[in-house]
Image 1 (tube, rainbow, N blue to C red):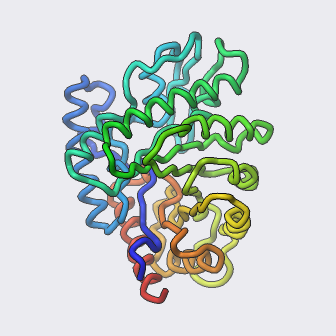
Image 2 (cartoon, rainbow, N blue to C red):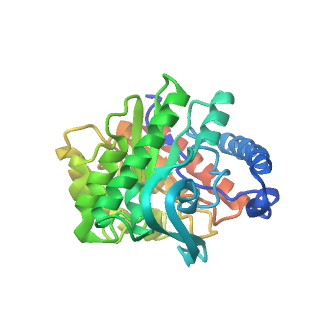
Length: 337
């Protein structure tokens, strides 16, 4: 069996240990780096125990959440109070009041730690330019398109710096765009700003993560023009919990296959097979059935297996069991391919 078939991957955040989460916002930089390093190593050990092929960045232990983390490393933004994102999770929203300038790298601590640990099977999630624009107030740039493109240039700077630090080995970059399909009239803005984020950077494999889309068809329409290699998408959240029969939550898989067939580049799918918003741990047979259904449409060398999103809203114990069942189900499928 080809070793690149059905790679299992972590694609986002994971619940922080209490010793980090309960102190996170009160820690100084040295203390945060020390505890986040400890938590990253522990989480990687947990991922490796579960059997994951790709360990992401060990659950994003250096970040509180995906918006405020990069925004606070920019000049030109004034921070306001908290707004709700999902699951009673909040972030502090910012206003862009001047030209954006990156003060420091968003994720260098994580990359250098993983490099020092000699981990090659990583993927670095970076909040995408469209989401950064959409979740900010614009009080400086001409319009939303111009602000998104400026964020695209900022993200491009970040990826270039991370790639330089990583060295010659291939670096997997995941651009997180939860807002990508929330404004159907702005899909050109989504397209152009994401492409700007990776423009001219060699030696990277680009992933795009869009979760809980109102209409994946909007995304699929621009896929042929996106400079993206893998699309890590959510499906389990929309599916039922039976183990046999058709998979109604996976209807968009066939649409994605149609998009793959007309794309000028070879692209692949990261298949969400476990719901990150429930504590119920999906049985191995259910996850196996979801994978087998998808294999009717997508070739195994173009398919990777992942949770719908990050698992930070679940306990570490439940998160681990979801990942373990996901890996075990994938192994069962590989036996019969």
